[in-house]
Length: 390
Image (cartoon, rainbow, N blue to C red):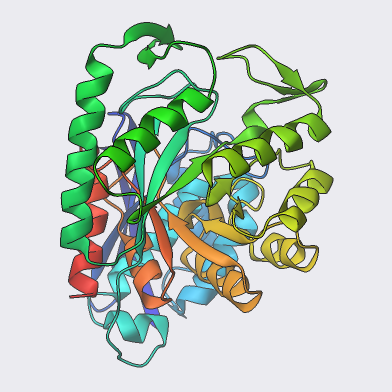
């Protein structure tokens, strides 16, 4: 156990050049740790939208609760923070949890912190962000209702994968250069001949196949369909303007899976459309249906969803879980229930690398990462994986 001597904070910049809270925990032995939480642009219904409480007030509440000046474990501190999330906010909670974790990391090995025997760690397969659509499209932006088109590496040889990724990115940028441009939510994006999400898939797979990489990378789509859901159905408002009720949207996904051999489909329906999740998951043998916002990195929801066969896998985002301990419990729940586990950072980043440690220490099979060519915080996380698995 460790004793918290003091908690302070400062404002730092995230990857969107916005000021955000970074907490500083000092332990009685002089060890210090910092924690600045990332945050998401696409927020699930389970996440708090914004916390208005000040950092000074949060620190006073922690002190009044008796967490400062007494010996406390990470799990005990996190259990306190988890109860306080409704008032202090999920991102503040994770930043505090992370700062305590990093302070204890000064005197304990990563294996000791996770309570695991010292064994050689291995890197995950990389789910590489290539094309970005939706309303927050920045890197290789394309007109699409879906926020991410990814290529999932079939090798863990990182030097080979990164070399292939570089070639894919080179050709993608070259071919997008001459495309017609349009504006979506203030972002200049590339559009294809028709307003059809399938053209994004055709574009990416043609590049993959022309480079002779069809056996090295599988296709993954993050649909974030909760953002498309209306009272009347799923509205593809950015492309063809079509509106589909759940049954028709199910057929839409089955057609895409069959036409393109889609291997991973993330959040194909909204968080509350449970019957559709169950129907699509039960129909698929080769395409893995993955819950992201659907589960929001909550161990209880992951376990319940696995029991009801809502999905084949779950995305784990540490700040979405709210604390270090909750993120670990979410991974453990997914693995215990036989769900494919995919770790992920958030689109608005800090230098936080806990997701890399979580991935390697639990042998998480996949990690969503990138865009590597424009977001150096993704490179920082990948470098941490290289160090841990080196």
